[in-house]
Image (cartoon, rainbow, N blue to C red):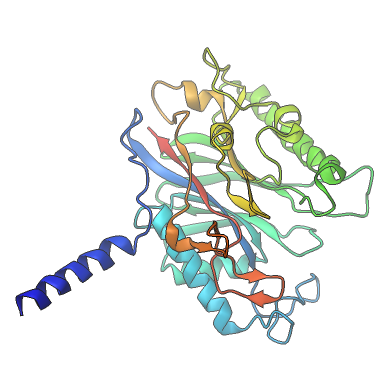
Length: 349
């Protein structure tokens, strides 16, 4: 009987602790009190199951080859909430940037699934993307108050007929202090990395133009760019297009300079997306020097950005390599979370 109860206690302990997956880095190691967690997650085609004639959503309907049924949709929502709760250390992160969402309905459904429909707000605009996917921001109403938002259109002068996702700009106050956010999902590498690079450079130019406007108005503005850039920190769209620094500077950056917090992670061989066995650092946080230099108020450290790669959201392939446990591979349903890993950072005050 003693052995039985000992085993039972062990099982309960393991369930309560191991089920949470990977332990997040200790938020107390850097200076400043943690005010909130900011997450970004490309959620891999979060579509509802209803046909929208205005967009190309035919792949994600109950009668499609994907067999995207209401049951599968609800499973997907539950799994995304599980991931986001874990990233937020027991509750949703304070700010959540999302990519590959179909519309505002899926955002509302996600918040209902998280039982956060009363406490979280949504910033979203329908974009002209050919696949019918958008970016969005979810925010904790008690921590963040949007005061201005707009979709930033990305137009390709070399291909005016092609459309892509807007960049979402949101200005708000986080615990009373002004914070600028840009949520990105830049054009993919589907046609080849070099062949498609001009499209990402065009997106970078749109973001850079907005940044210049922000810094002209206030050179000490605190800015966070987040997103799936479909490029890595060392690529031209980041270093030349956005003019972001990717290595820790010897001296303090100017307040209006940009720093890519994922550059160090890329150098260490880490990534948020696995392509044919290689890790790519596509999902990133890029911040203004003002956030890194601040001795008080809203701030963060050079090591405050992380990838959430808990074992339970990973799939181990036949070669023993762990990759993100995705929802689909082509038309094959795996029932996982997403083909990207979420990234997150600590905001301090």
